[in-house]
Image 1 (cartoon, rainbow, N blue to C red):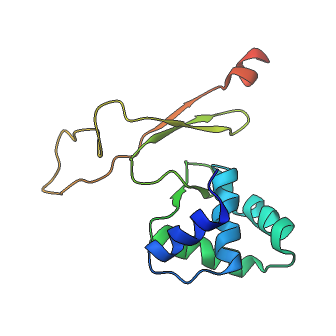
Image 2 (tube, rainbow, N blue to C red):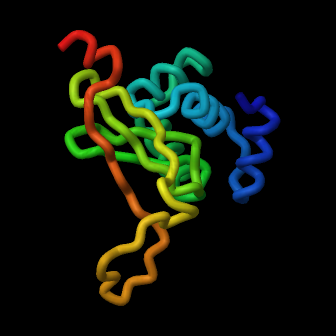
Amino acid sequence: MPTTSDFERMLRGVTLRVTRPRVAVLSAVHGHPHAETDSIIGVVRADLGEVSHQAVYDVLRVLTAKGLLRRIEPPGSVARYEARVGDNHHHIVCRSCGFIADVDCAVGTAPCLTAADDHGFVIDEAEVVYWGLCPECSNHH
């Protein structure tokens, strides 16, 4: 887990001012991969005290735009955030409990899949979501 000074360096590296909410949000997402916004708000509030929903939403948006976080939204799920960025990995989602895990690219680097017809696009990312039951849920069915 990165330290506060690591988070400060990350923010400066993308030319963002270091603020307590930004550091707290980065820390929350690093500590809770695939967390939804409400969970992140809870973790940030436990760290900093009262912080508005809007402040956390704004920080999430800025950190995602600057490439420090990745926003994912599997079909049927709320938006979730993770700190693993830049490697075009995929996800596996449990249909029962909603648990999400990372899945590395099957072939090489981004976009790691070749479209049958790229329609002239320069493709730089592919998103794959695997669905199934996690081990715990499959043992209960």
